[in-house]
Amino acid sequence: MDDLTPLDHAHLAAEADESLRPRFWSRLLEAELYVPLEEEAGETAIRPVVLETGEGRIALAFDRDRRMAEFMEGAAPFAALSGRRLVGLLAAERIGLALNLGGHPSETILPVEALDWAVEQLADLTQVREAAVREVRAPRGVPQVLLEALAAKLPVLEGLAREAWLAGVRYRDGSEGHMLALVDALPQAQPQIAEAMAEAVRLSGLEAGALDITFVAGGTQIVETLRTRAMGFEIPQPAEPVREVIAPGSDPDKPPRLR
Image: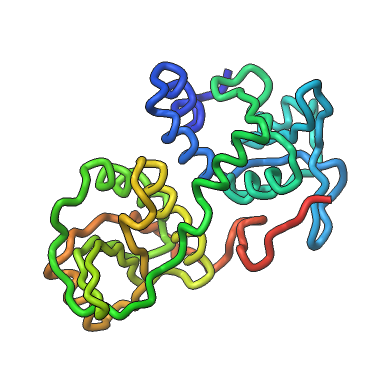
């Protein structure tokens, strides 16, 4: 048995305590998954290995390439997709997900209904409020569950942004709320980051409107204001700069399609 992965830990925790199942979904959606294919991927389409079962069609996915190789008994063509992309693709085609088959701790079969739930929970969560900010202040009354969710999710964004600041804001239309500002985020990664942050909100049990997400450039006046008034979160930075390349299947402008 190989070492436990984050998905293994999250699944085991959810099996022991049902209230922790949202954390498992969060780990699944942010993970890079290896999907065995019937043939080499085309430029715009993939054909995953799909098993016909008494409960419908299910596609295979693994969170480690060695797990995939062991189950497939050797090398096989594959696609590497983010969990959130794969879930959306499979739900649209009415295909369930068989995760980490082969006796691993996170082995589970997620039916189409479970994928539908995930898609519904995450729909329209990346809309960023367009109203101009009138006032930035220190955050007040932020639920502890949200702070914990952000602290857990932001390290996943290693190298994709430089800083993250949580602030209370008043907009020009008079409304108030909280805003998470990501500083100097890689342009190609911004949809991916917004989705990840929105997932942290929804999967914490809060409404999507509990937090607005925005991207700002370093060296601007609003960043200086955030640094003096807002709550900062650390985003790890790699030793080598991250190139503006999205993992296969993760480019929101060119998502693969199933065929």
